[in-house]
Length: 397
Image 1 (cartoon, rainbow, N blue to C red):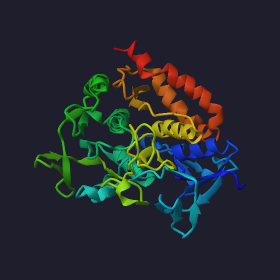
Image 2: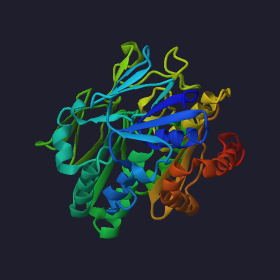
Image 3: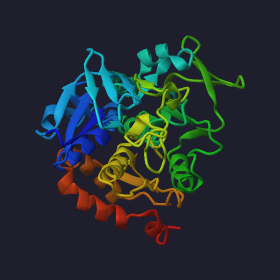
Image 4: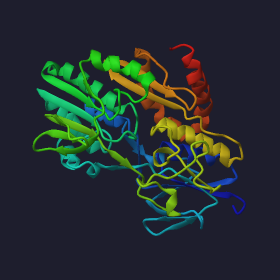
């Protein structure tokens, strides 16, 4: 045991769990995974709760997902001291390491937008908790007329296509209930176009317009007046609503990192976008939603970053390509993907039935991917190679 390298992974989300289960297969690493809950959550399921009332794939016990050779600690990592190579938990445990990987996820700050706490209590959202997603479901299933607004407050939110999936799934649900003609759906975004990436906007905006969804651009949300049922922008413009959902502000994890200058003002961990290395520390990495190295706050990004860190821990010179691969459901059995990397903009991938099927099918085998990455690694390597932005741009222009 004395010759093994001590690896501590903070956070049992998709990136942290895949990394821990991958590294424990290498005999020269002793792996400890710290997670603050006994469950692992599949966050894309919040959309399915909000608009379909389906929580079947929401969570699983982390005990059933972690390799039996990983030392699993259910506790909250409270402080990480990089200079002294130790992690301190909320219960007071001190864990010393040779390498640490920080993947604790992020936190949601509803209070950053004045009035949004009260708005969420009334109408819910699909970015924070299952309880708030169920509030959205109750809103959608009870609404009969008026205006439904989905407003993006934070451009750096988790899952870039999710607000668009939200309005399109709301459109589907309201049409199936037969009340869509009496309800106006408005998407309010801070960008100059519906979707920030121009190339993918060419795919998505026509779908939004075809479904009769209004688009408000340059909408910089500042506050919400729940009593008067209106949103107010930084410029003083107002948008009325009968029901409203805000994609809330995202902050870094509840974690003290020393030295303190290695976190941004919003609490995200500063890490190199190519290597995931934290500052100048060769023994510390940050991946997933908590890190500034992420190209998009998604499970796929965390997964790909985990594999890069695994290779670097083994002495290989691996780097992130900035690959995004976001499945996007647009309702009525259709879907697409947001696929890009540092060298290529988002591919103009037209909506198709097969892409919807792929997204729904992935939710079924997601849990096995977490538990047995050694089986899925070659499959994903082949899949990501076949669907590389470079390859797809030769087909879809």
